[in-house]
Image (tube, rainbow, N blue to C red; front, side):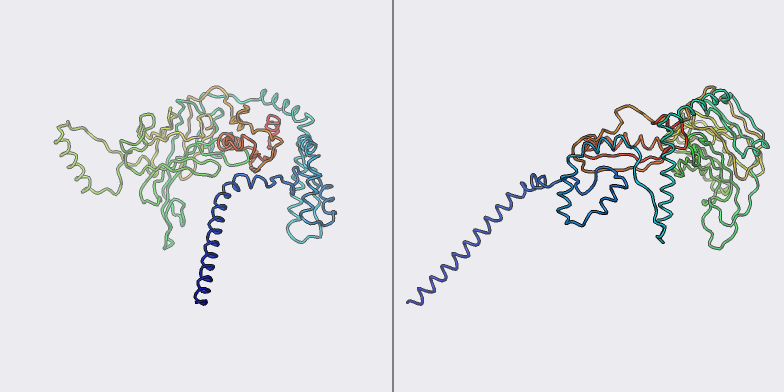
Length: 474
């Protein structure tokens, strides 16, 4: 009896201990569940976001040397040391950073180093010295005086805006196959090119053809006519506002085609290819003209033509329409045959007609205007007889690349306040990329985090090669 009572007591105590443990576990899980939202809301805010381990300005060489000589201290003591030294001097450092534009760092490379860092330091030192001289000229006003003298000289010898420009084929060759349009184009301007495509020649690896596995020569005959923005950019290839490329032979499709495109800063857009088929009726037009006209294919058989005529006859008989005479033209360019090409600037795009017949229409692409087209080039397998440009604008437009700038306060980056900055974004940009910087300012730099100065974005732009632009933007 005693053993049975003892066993009952031990079993009861075990059950009670298990129940107590389970109750404690449930209570613990309940407390953790209730505490998690509080930790996310207020727990991380108690952590210090002050960038204590980083200086808030670009220090000089003396500051760096003092930090190197400082004895080694634990990381925690370094934080407290920075806390004491940074807080009182923060306003003074901010004041100094606003006054000093050029860094006080010294570029003294170590001559004993055997890696490539020596050349890198020398290049950085040279760039820094040149930039300092240019900035000193801007600060002293010498650049402004030189700009005024240059402006007077330009006004005295400024080029006029002729209504028309004409060149013979020999004159075009002496000018590097480029005809200049001093003031660009305007609505209704037209350019006429009289030329003769050369006979096809053999090429081993033409760019417009597919790769040849047997390494056989391919017959190629093509030429290129381009409208270029000679004054739109500086220090790089001019943009190709219109790239007109008739390919008589050698195209990868095996058919004569006309390809049109645009290229800006070595970036080609999507090409418009005319391969002998008329653009569909549901496709958008350019000033009422289709983008591609139809021409007769050379490899079209008489059987296919007969079948097409039968289908057209049955269709016209079914809908009881009067028979219309349909004229089909061949490909507008033929080897060693003279042609007259006219390029016209319309309201919505460029129109090309050959020997009086409309061939293609190319809509304006975003980023280009008629006044940007200040040059025409004709290259490739063609002998140009004459070039004539008429109905040109008679006044000077603004070709300055910085015309894209909008200096209103709306697009200016907000000044850095005394509050903490969570993220800094540095944007590297070339000196003449004005349009790209304005696109950034008008897009993601309008985000609420940047406007509230919680995130700071700044451009790192080198001084421009033209002093006039530096003076204007200073």
